[in-house]
Image (cartoon, rainbow, N blue to C red; front, side, top):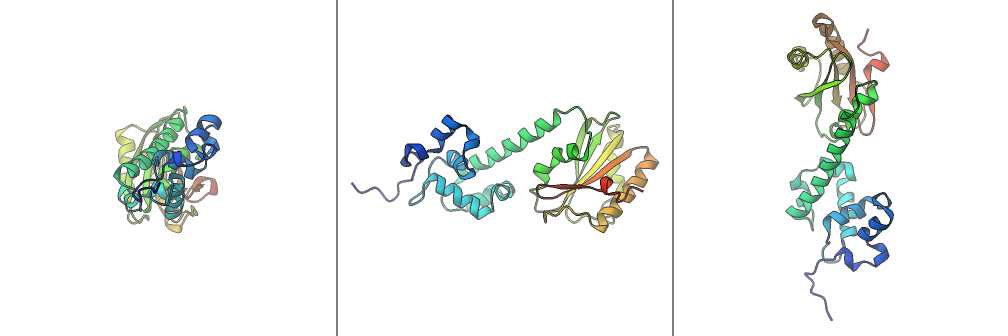
Length: 234
């Protein structure tokens, strides 16, 4: 019998031992590759390409999971074999992962280190194609009050208004703040502009009696603390 060429290639077309859903149930989700996890979300492939192969192509086209995290639904839908429903399912799963990460970090009582502060934001900030600057507001015991998103675009000491860094801190009666911004290149090495911005913010914080505890630069999978490097905190 000749198959209809329009037929989609389903996970059930694979041998039982190769089916991602069955392997997940037997061995747990950690046993599956990224492509196999995507295949479970996609459910069906297309002519000549099963769901796992479609997942592999999607990862290759976007440069892995981080590229998918950065993609818009329109970007995903442009890929052959991906319609609105499949694209929405993939991006919804990625967003759930981001929210789980954030909830886990926010359960901590206080920020005790640069790593604690970076964990609040790096999942999301490391995916941005542009620079973003946020402020983490803390109380007198270094517990999280709020995260304020202030700037997007090219950042330096001349374009960032120092008063804006402290507006929300004053309104919310914060005792301290941490500046965080990302480097879309993935390299978190601080620039001279980053150091100048830090120095200006630290000086303003002393006048306002609001401690600037740190300035973090978020890269791809890593971060740098200007406080730890002694940059701008003199």
